[in-house]
Image 1 (cartoon, rainbow over the protein chains, first blue to last red):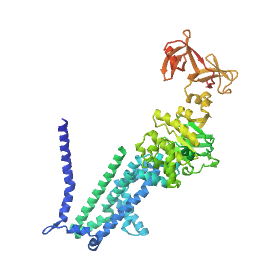
Image 2 (cartoon, rainbow over the protein chains, first blue to last red; image 1 turned 180 degrees about the vertical axis):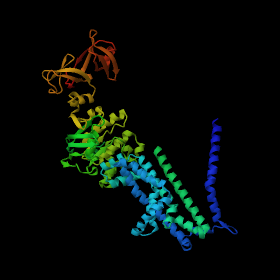
Image 3 (tube, each protein chain N blue to C red; image 1 turned 60 degrees about the horizontal axis):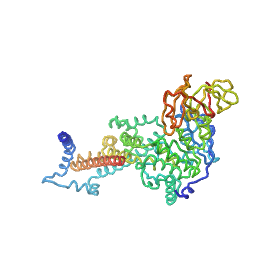
Image 4 (cartoon, rainbow over the protein chains, first blue to last red; image 1 turned 120 degrees about the vertical axis):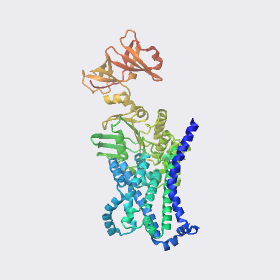
Amino acid sequence: MNAARRRKQSLLRWFVLVPLGAFFLLPLYAMLEFTTRSADGRTAEVWTTLLDWRQIQEDYPELSAGVVYSLEQAALTAVLMLVLLVPTMVWVRLRLPWLRRPLEFLCLLPLTIPAIVLVVGLAPVYAWVTYFVGGSSLTLTFAYVVLVLPFAYRALDAGLAAIDVKTLSEAARSLGAGWGTVLWRVVLPNIRSAVLSAAFLSVALVLGEFTIAALLNRENLQVAINLLGKSSATISVAVSLVSLVLAFVLLFALSFVGGRRRSKETS
Amino acid sequence: MTAEAVADLRRDGVEVALAGLRRTFGTVHALDGLDLTLAPGELVALLGPSGCGKTTALRVLAGLEDADAGTVTVGGKDLTRVPANKRNMGMVFQAYSLFPHLTAVENVAFGLRLRKAGAAERRTRAAEALELVGLSAQADRYPHEMSGGQQQRVALARALAIRPAVLLLDEPLSALDAKVRVQLRDEIRRIQLEVGTTTLFVTHDQEEALAVADRVGVMRAGNLEQIASPEEVYARPATAFVAEFVGLSNRLPGVVAAGGTVEVLGQVLPLADADAAARGTAVTTYVRPEAVEVAVDSASPARVVAAAFLGSSSRVTVALPGGETILAQVPSAAVSELAPGTGVRVEFARTPVAVSPA
């Protein structure tokens, strides 16, 4: 009876996994197939080009600029988000608990607003941003911090809920720690996986962002891919494939971080 | 434990004075003009029911809570406006407060590192503090690898390693099981006597307070009802609240008699406070079960209704002819003669009793 049940469950698992795997992997395979297609069989020319950064800079300057901008935007967004959110969330937990719900609402709000609506609101703000700090594509970081808030908030909130922030910080304070030390040496090391999750999610989100960058006339990887699609379809698809795989790797790394933390807690 | 370990952590106790402390949370007066002075090297236990303000008093002393009014003076210095991290006070919390990402020895060395102690000094002092609490063998364990009792010991070592001016213990034993609690309670007292640090111990467990403290302060509604030696608080409770809160008491009707005495069920007993009420006043008296003596007397109308075995002693409930019931503590050896229904004669030992208006 048990063996029959196990077999049935195993069948059901494959029944779900195979179509799901095909749903995700087939487009990726199709992209790979497209980028290696040539008039006389297969070629790896596109991929060798992609591996040669100098050649990309020469042949596709907008793509190389887009890659650099996106990486910078991702790094800046993750850092700015953490600098803003971690101390705020810790302070609210310690001193302003009544602000927790309003803060959560505020942080989750961008999730409910479509990117196109966000852009409508952001356009006049960015007129001022351009006026004060210039029109660099890195200024998109401000908009991206807002965009990643819901995901980062959830990840950090779970991390903070897993430790007794109040007691730990009071213990550190009584031992002579200032607020900076409490945050850096006590809170952060104990929410490291949550911080990593928040950072990974932010990076994945920023690397895939198109709407806001395109509509605010800024550069990033997705805008470059879109532009490139009009002149060199194979390169454009290859870069898309790389960025998709990168996002997969990031999310995989994220689940690995979470898994390791769980196993450490149960040991 | 080596003598050097103690000598190194020993410090001259300082006087701690809380004067006129007030703290209000909304409409609740957690502290209502509290005055409390701890002599150098003394261990004072603050005892009281939930919400009486004992933890608030400790947190105000630690600097983790601001007082609305009043002053905190330690060793003659006014610390009222000094932030918690500049007060040099070691604290052990009710909840486990070890830093989960650090080992026991790293936890103990945390405060020393903040004081810019060199690596060698940190190692030595942390090892000494762990030795003092008997956990040298667990130095490299993480908090999740230790039992609750061990974690609280490490927390105590961490608090002592910084050679604090004052040691603050906020119900440090309440999360532990009964046996470990008694063990650690005695150990805390031993260590406190060895290192000589002035200590404030907050607890709701009367047995704990009576066992470890030089003086016990019983708190109620943000103020002290009585502060005295454990023996005094137990034997001569200043108020009805103290009599009821500390230990078990029989509430019996009485009338104040001449010369600081009170007549209870036909017997004259000394009053804990001779000026508690005027002669002839009807009062409620509080008589301890161990001050009640029962002897088998089949002619007596008082009857045993129940007997509870408590180990070395037993508690016998006696119904009196007037309708009152009275608890008596008797040696367990004698309880076999006191089966329910047995007629008994009830007498009181001449120990002072507390009274309140009837």
